[in-house]
Image (cartoon, rainbow, N blue to C red):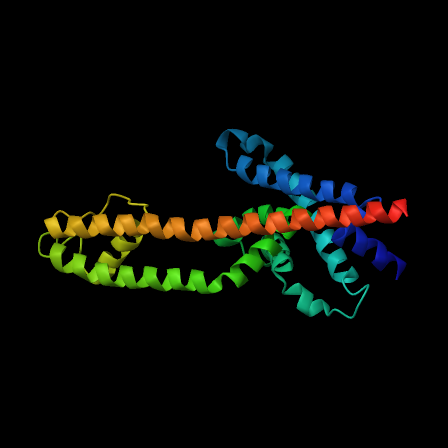
Length: 258
């Protein structure tokens, strides 16, 4: 039980344990090193160092594995939280995906998509306390403003599915190899609405260009609206948090004086 307590505090509440931050620094250095090696080992001029890279990857995986097992072992220290349920939390799924490519290689499974999963190690940085706090605030904002976001999403879909067939009808006869179907037109509408505009497809008729102009303007507007809602709500949350912190410090100061 004492070991569970120590591991739980080190991994879940590092600020409360004397070795917590030290272990966290090791974990984050390991993440950065493993990501760096992931890029370096693809460089042809560095192939003579392949054995060294393999050794670093092995050490990295050992650290990740010890961390993963330790989290599973210690999670029910304070309560009866089920380990199986904990395994399916977002962070633990990421941790598992980080480990899978290595252990599946022992089964002669070495598919390219498994190797690319190694890049998911970077997402482990979201375990930082500040990121977790930000995620909580973001989740609260999305919950509180869900009606606004849903309205914007529905309006965007309506605009896309209205303009796409119109552009198809105006452009298909003129550019039959470009706007071959409404699905192609929908793809063009999406990249135009999102202001990506690859340039591989574009209307050449007068009405097509007018619709493209409207779609581009709508796209900019519909990006700005949710952005302003999110920013405003986030600043409001941060101000409330700052105000609550000041009140707490003030109460603690008054309590000490008494």
